Image (cartoon, rainbow, N blue to C red):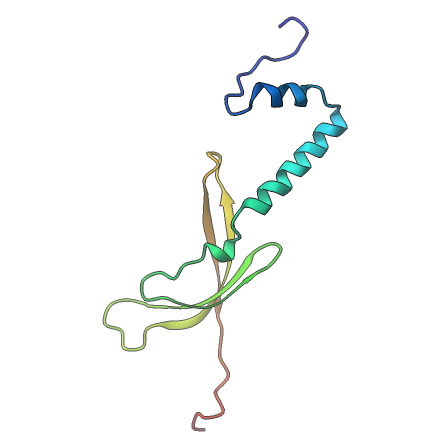
Length: 123
């Protein structure tokens, strides 16, 4: 094209949609982008619903926060340990979006949570 525009093949967009988008102003396109990002967030499963206990693990709590998901869990250390599972341990979990648009959960270990002695435990 000689008018400075770039011709691209958008295989997943219909011709009607691309024609409508081509007719929008810059401000209207920004609004379409903002709306599309909101829709994607609404359609996406929250991190808390993606958390699953691994073998021998016990998920004690999961709480979605604006920037991360807080997870408290107990974990096994290995075979034949009479004290397993250990913990509770605190994690912040983030969803990482990769360049290929796939995602995975990134677990950040923050440390052990110490539980106060229960009222029924001996002194």
